[in-house]
Image (tube, rainbow, N blue to C red; front, side, top):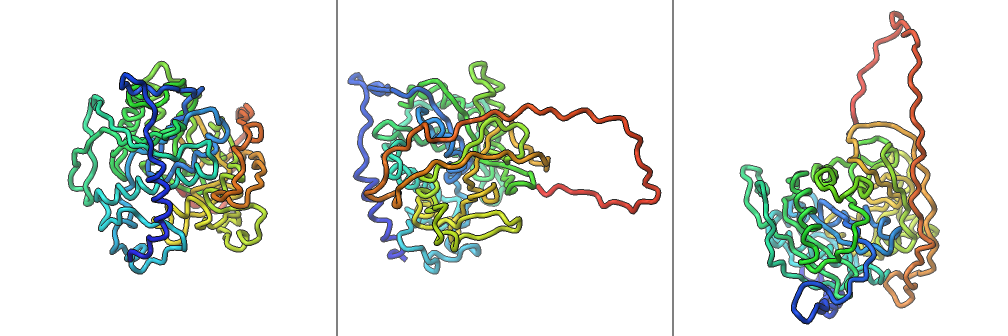
Length: 427
């Protein structure tokens, strides 16, 4: 089994060698010597692998200092159970050449080793993305949080059989980039157990205490969330933790006078009527994360078509996502290259209100084209310089086209019509 993970040794050496101390004031305070960020983007995910659903926001505003926030540690995943009927035992799983397995190797889900493996995979992913685009954080330094925030209500998480709610440490684990390019914050609210109240509290504490935690205290430009949707036009994903993140950020904005609804960027279906931002991942980001190249016939062959006929590309170990997260699923998570037909998609749309998990058809919004990029090897020596902000798509407000009021028309008689079957939600 151990030889399956030898391919990951090189990256772990890079991660270890990259550890350094974030420069601080000589008086020992947490305040960095230089905080040159013009704004802060807080990207909140339920699980430590959802962050790519919001990546285009960072590409669109490269002056924002990113804080990746994770509400749980993904410890319920069947991939941590080496007797799982979903993926089989690790001894029988064939990892792709170069794919990084879990570290440490967990014996079961709902264990500390599973949580640690999930966190390490996310730090790996962000490190690899930073190698492709050095503008983003990826040289991680663990930050000890001595300050324990006040908690005004119960914070616990369910045990595996849901028979009891176990108390947990509400103090997050924090990593800061050694070059001060961003941070990653991991809470422990429980997998399939996150509540909107926990999200509002956790993100609120981070905002209030970020200076003492050594994070940038520049003005907040965006509060973003992972994807959720119950609309038939896009992939249906109604995970309760994802919904709790969106509801929790909306609750936080309601509670805090210095936060504004316009800061919210809640990843949603392109037919959501509350969309205010829409972007497409750059070609560099698509290739760096998924090994996906739009004009590459080999990727056309490896891709697949879903039932609606929309195009996707199968992720592979040429990309950071497949390398870091491939062990979580047989094969690799695909990238929805055209339309939002996969959980991770190039066309990303964001609303200021939580997604409606009921179908609500509306006109699909057209998305700008990706920026060009000349690199053939996102992680190699030919990696291009940081992409120019001028080449990135920008946010365009949705036209205000109100629906005209219905006219008074007599209802047609249905005496001679066959009975209609009731429609049901596909969410």
